[in-house]
Image (cartoon, rainbow, N blue to C red; front, side):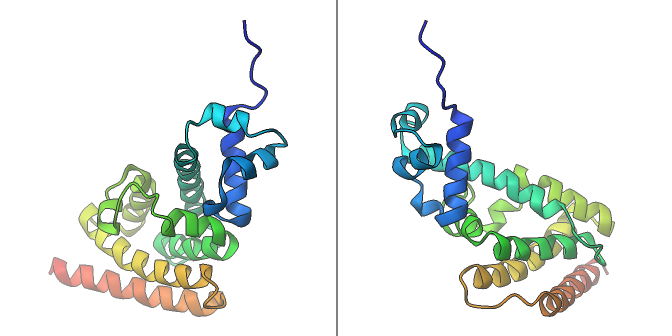
Length: 190
């Protein structure tokens, strides 16, 4: 019976996740991951036939991590969506390399926001919003799209070092966008 591998698949994914966090997803390769694990490249390639497969596994882990981050609202907000929107922007501030890998690397299974809104990964976020706002799922998705585009714009600019983070200013703008999105949905209901 062959010896049990000392480096597990999960260990490889975790190490690659840390590489992405520290220096960006584009720097995930057999050498950087092996260095993080303090081993040769052989265990990395044993678990993943290609680096593309490893990056996909890291992306999936990152997607779950990001969803958990979004749902952990730090301070009470006027609405769940405001808390989620601020967390989305905070994620870009606190984890710029992970943000860029998640949203600017081309690894998303969905090619655009309209496809993403119906993805399984967003069900917890959209459901929490719907419950908090007390409107239909279709209306909730419209509000989500508006706030997502607004928050993503801020987050992308910040993650790419083109704007300094000012939480009070961003919170004020996000609240205005949220109120506008709610008003637009309410107008459609009439």
